Amino acid sequence: MRLKRRVHAEHESSHGIDLAPMLDFVINLLIFFIITAVFVKATAVVVNRPTGFEQPNEDDSKSIQIQVLENGEVWVDNRAIDTRAVRANVERMSAVNPDAGVLVLANELAPMAVIVEVVDQVHLGGIYNITFTTTE
Image (cartoon, rainbow, N blue to C red; front, side, top):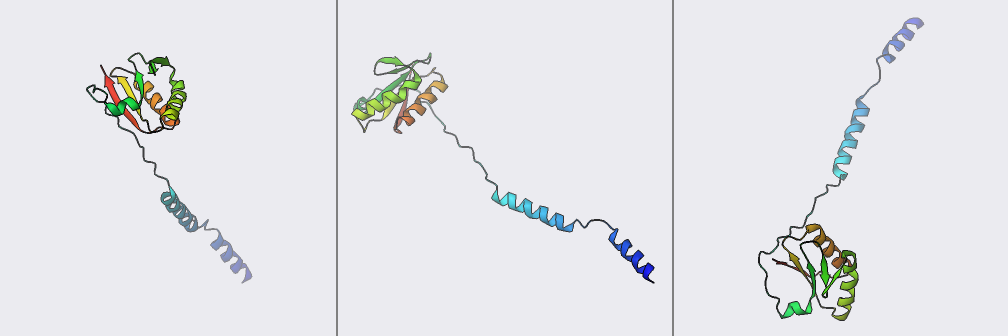
């Protein structure tokens, strides 16, 4: 009789591994990762360049004017500068007139990378009031 019980016990344990708890655990992990996932939304700034050149008005004369030519040269205060020097010039000019904004006069054929770099340098200089104008 003992022999039969032993054979019966060995027969029951040889069925294999029960996968139901593992499946429950995997489903719980899946739900956790879906809920805690960060959904990144790509943000972009759409820049619409004006088509015509408007004459600067009285408010623009108080603003800091930065010109970007079609060959990528940047002019501030009637002198050519490097794009990395825009920040220092903007900080110096905004110290004189703290309420001044920036007027970016860009040629319509100017490289967009240079314009974006100028705007980044202006932001680093602490001015967020930027107006864009194109020249022909």
